[in-house]
Amino acid sequence: MMKYQDMTVLPALQAELAAATDRLLATAASLSDTDIAAPSLLPGWTRGHVLAHLAGNARSHLNLLTWARTGTKTPQYSSYEARATEIAAHATRPAARLLAELGEEAARLATAIRDLPEDRWSAPVEAMRPPPHPAWYILVRRLREVGLHHVDLDAGHTPADWPASFVRRELHDCLACWPYDRSTISEVIIKEGTRTIAEWHNLGTGPGVTGAPADMLAWLTGRSDGKGVSLLPVGQSLPPRPGPADLPDPPPWQTMPAPADLPMTPPKDYS
Image (cartoon, rainbow, N blue to C red; front, side, top):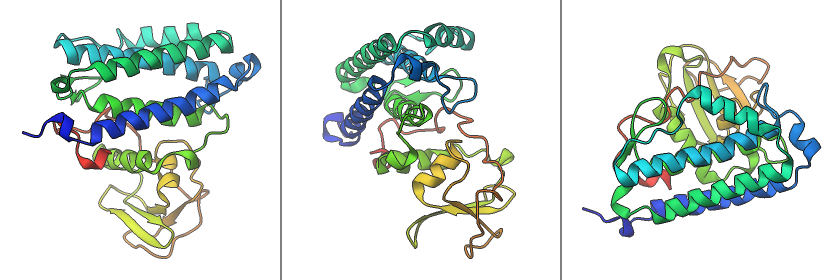
């Protein structure tokens, strides 16, 4: 069996998370108390809500790492209600306090990641919803939270700033978790310039769409109105029709917190 120290995916994910966290903390450090109280891109949430959630999410992933390390079930959150109450209570804190809390929780999470024994990265854990997943996928889930919510702060970081590795991995998991029975589109054609790099077919009913990787991910995750995404006639690859005004609503995103039946060790697709 391949040993974890022979693999490159886990170190790559850890390095990517450290860099993404540093970028997030730099943005958070630039926000004043007035900035914190302003609306984020998430309906009903201020920037303070987003930062409070990100700090609490780091704590929640510590719970899952404890579960992986000890084998004792340690829920990510005690309940959805407790999670929402904590976010609301912390969201109105001063900017400096929110920044300090986010930095402290991110550092604690980084230490727990560093110290997790190699053989525990394959231990099964579970989010608030199924399916269970191996502990290595905690890194992917935390990267998703940091990457998407950094954009939600509406403080200068946009989908164009997402690393290519993040976009590639998240598009991979969008397809792996596709809600076929609730899909609003039938196909996705992803292009880099004039080159097609991925084609997803038989996704459900509705039109096909095409766009560049980051633009497509931003639309599918609800982080854009469809800028850079165009319609295709159903079942055809050309010619695209203008968007985003003609685009349907994107299909429901993240109906599952993880793809089902993930391998016990992270495949190359996740690096």
